[in-house]
Amino acid sequence: MPELALVVIPTYNECENLPQIVPAILAQDPRVEILVVDDGSPDGTGTIADVFAAQDPRVHVLHRANKEGLGRAYLAGFAWALQRNYAYVFEMDADFSHDPKNLTRFIEAATDADLIVGSRYASGVNVINWPMSRLLLSWFANKYARWITGLPLTDATGGFKCFRSEVLAAMPFDKVRSNGYAFQIEMSFRAWRKGFRIKELPIIFTDRMEGRSKMNGRIVREAIWMVWWLRLQALLGRLG
Image 1 (cartoon, rainbow, N blue to C red):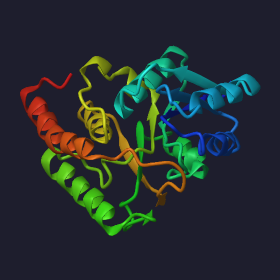
Image 2: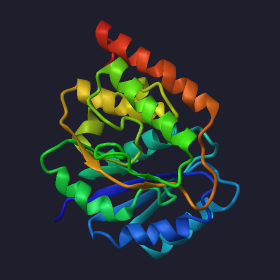
Image 3: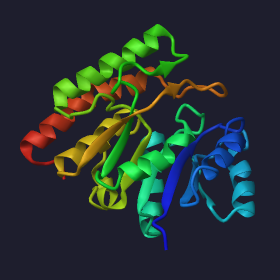
Image 4: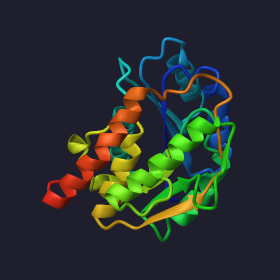
């Protein structure tokens, strides 16, 4: 029996993108299944996900009553995956900023690594359709995160990842503090501190064509202080 992979897709108001991304993912690899984690989208995203799940046993849906943030949605999806013994668990956006064609490539890379991170900056700057202000914010944020934490990644804030299930099983989900884009830094930092092997694969990131970005000032502020908290907790041996 082949080892299965689960792509966890958090959604909030993604009714334009979900009908396109689900079949695109399923077409890539027969080992791949999907879990849509919908935070009570008022635009009907959850209902669309239910229709897919009723039609295809490779699609699953986890409904949550309220919008609680990216990190909480991913943790709920990870817990769901661990209960069902998937070998690989992906983080992936619903808006095609992460190309589904990379999924098999990530699984192959996970044969000799524990966490695969899709990097926008591992081979230059590979970002399409971002304004210069957003690109500079992202680029400097990653330099800042690496400087403070020592995390050896060019793209610590990237959200296209593949975890071997052993990595997630070792994570103390109840101690994960961050919820926005800092969640990406925290999960990679915890994996690195636990001695898991991390590999970056260059990807091309294309900004969403449909829907609205979830980026806001609160998410940026969380990332600024979270890297210092992670460094301090690691120094004190309290990271868990």
